[in-house]
Image (cartoon, rainbow, N blue to C red; front, side, top):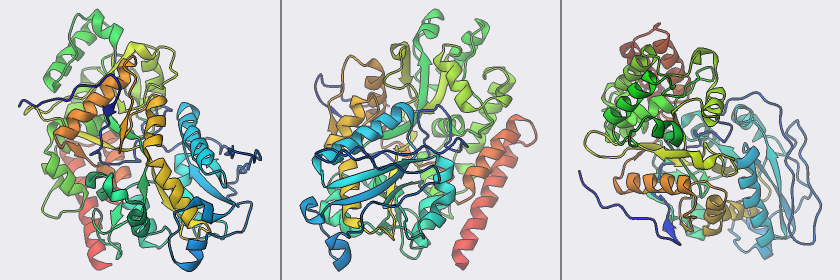
Length: 489
């Protein structure tokens, strides 16, 4: 299959816009999922303009604002988009971004406050797991946050929307014209019918950031060059390189499993499965079986790689973050991970490359989504100001901030530095995937319990306590049980 690939212009580059969103993709800790138990970090409001007062959230997650003035539009039921009419307000944003990625989010918030100095943002940073676990309770409190990170799928956004805990964003989408730049593949990921029975259709309940994360493969350029081989483009070529690496005493594939990672499994499913079957299954089609999606074949391939000793030594006792730390120190050749694994300020960033493998047909399929989805709490006293923040985080300015910090932009064009070879490769791969209409959602969005089912089952397969076929059966049972529950409810 031949295709025309748009080359990167020296000044401007069209970012990959037709991307399926997934907050499932973790942050720059190098951990495959966001379920960590580290202490809560207080967020600081660095307000632009004359007001230099900082609003600091406590470690208990206090999200109380510093004023009681409501947005005019929120009081009357109308929509106010003019910041000057919103008065002097403080809104609370709850997100999980830390370290280098925290700097990216803070820069975005700072730029928003510089543009709208009367709207102050109290940013509260907490662990992903803490946000996900406490959102249903937090959103019913009187001091509920105005904006918070949500995960796609039934385990998070679907439940919050069905429970009336987050705001239907359709009126804001119309007021701001979000449909003009938001691809349907992204919008579908954060839409649910108002009766709470269908994902991928209906109303908009969250908004993406202007940054995308795909599951792809990072590689160590020095180690690859030492083998005298070219960068692989197909799975067969990739496995041939892994064979050569193992023979040369190099760990072929980075892997750690204590935190139940799913990036490697999903990437292999993308290569081996049918993209339409994957998407249809995730969006709840009863006509598609998980056996049609390539998941079993992906699990069997991972087991084969484990048996060959291709994974990081003693991976059973490592987290994906531990394993990726070894990768960034040059101890392994490849790492299946979400785009953004190598921070923009990484000292040896130029030692790494990025690739995505095609299917045998030549089609490039990838699990990918915006890096963050943000919803407005139904009890927010400042819904219009919160919507203005969402609008800014989807703007061209926000997309440029994203690329300036070395991450992959979405939704708009951005000026990509041509002297940063890694981000050039990341964006080129995204462009090809977009051109092939090859983006698929995250499998764990399928049901509220699918992440736990899939991540547990792949551990059992690698431990030879279950077969790939038994894993497929367990996933199908999870899917069928949820469909039955939806039909009843």
